[in-house]
Image (tube, rainbow, N blue to C red):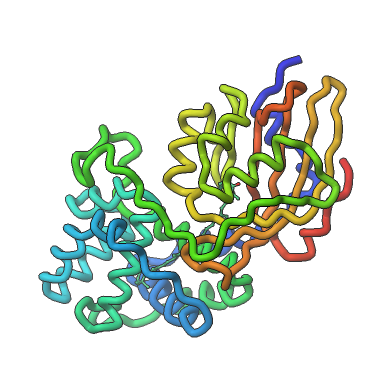
Length: 323
Ligand code: 45D
């Protein structure tokens, strides 16, 4: 019997608990554009009292520089219009360029705008803005999340901004084929991996390779038709697509799996669920995200499928009951 991605997606499905992250983003999506911008400003400055992202490196900022320079030279009204266009995904030249940015370049762009707002060079909130009650509702929902969930909400709202370029031919700006700049690791990568209850070589090898940003080694552990499903996303299928994704979005992560279970299936394949903590290079050791990996390993020991899920609460780190 051959494995299918659809059936792989449902392994350990009984341990899935609805996450507050999409619920919070759904509330955010209902706000009007000015309220969305105000929400992000308040949420980000409030969060900044306890955690702040690391400054993006010069190479990453350079990818966003042309847009940032244009915005700096604008009047406050024009700056507000650019931000409204981004938040409403309008089809404008700036919103299109932004739409072609990688996730980390989008974050770097907003990081720098945030700095410029603090310096008073860019206007944070539209002149004469009046907050609607909905903003308070979303801010209160955000306060109930843990820090890992809060930064995921911010990340996902930023990723969704800009004109949707997925149906367009690749842009010439930023230059096609430009390498994603590397994240500098501030702590030595974790090299020897031990997971309570798990000895599966493909899984241990995966974590070890990812912690060293050795994506070629990680990819070599997958079947050619294998898939990786990031949190709240559809599976990314095939080793070429997974490799591209990893180079863009999985750099500099610290993966600290803690415990797991492994079940052998009738056809000799294995399903594993592992829980643990992941740190993003944006926040380093200050924010831990509680996550689960659900692996389906084929009878030859290759990864056919891995899903990464954000856990709803730390209690779920211990929810490893058998199906
Ligand atoms: O609009 O095994 C202002 C995979 C004002 C790979 C602002 C993974 C207005 C495989 C405040 C300026 C990657 C899937 C905006 C594992 C305004 C694998 C700015 C998982 C927008 C484990 C806002 C990895 C700003 C995970 C600057 C789970 C916001 C990684 C900045 C998760 C927000 C990483 C930042 C996360 C958020 C990173 C920097 C959640 C970063 C979040």
